[in-house]
Length: 243
Ligand SMILES: Nc1ncnc2c1ncn2[C@@H]1O[C@H](COP(=O)(O)OP(=O)(O)OP(=O)(O)O)[C@@H](O)[C@H]1O
Ligand SMILES: [Mg+2]
Image (cartoon, rainbow, N blue to C red; front, side):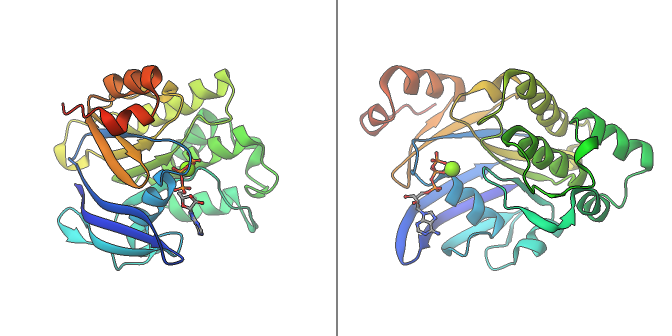
């Protein structure tokens, strides 16, 4: 469903990501690990068309190269992202953005989603304006749940989130990614994590380790996570687990 072919990303003339190749089939969730500054967020933003980076190579959504499309065109085609750090947009309220992206929702369905992420009290506030870290993550997840995208990109959903809120966020992501029976409704997801907690809620199929802008390992996400915990990311440059 989502494929990257030889994607190289430059920011302000500097190469941040080199020759990234990925295939995420319909119905699969892939996990991206990597040290601070390795390029994980830059990769997710490049896939979504954000961040003003110069992107070479192909980003294919169901076989269509979307690398030259704008963010909103990609969103309309069914790409969605929950950012690591979301900008505040005081001019629009959370309620307004939900009404725009979730226009097909009935009132009960919308209310139920808002309730499930405990965002009712945030609806009238400017989007992300003075939201706490946990409120920001819950609001990002709610926006994804309401947008209902077919490709789901999630950047560190559990960072800075307390244990109770990790349960709320984990359950929301699980709900979004749980596979419906009809193959054409299945999603593809790429999720960045440092702590691995979110993997308790997801049926992750494959994992990657990104070090210094290149994918150094690919394989079973839990095995990769364990290796990284034991040997650190530097170990990934020497060790090459392949499946
Ligand atoms: N707009 C920009 N201008 C200059 N440098 C940038 C820009 N965006 C990203 N970078 C640099 O690119 C590198 C990768 O950043 P990125 O945010 O993708 O890392 P990351 O893997 O997500 O790290 P973290 O785990 O800390 O979130 C960093 O060195 C960062 O400073
Ligand atoms: Mg990041």
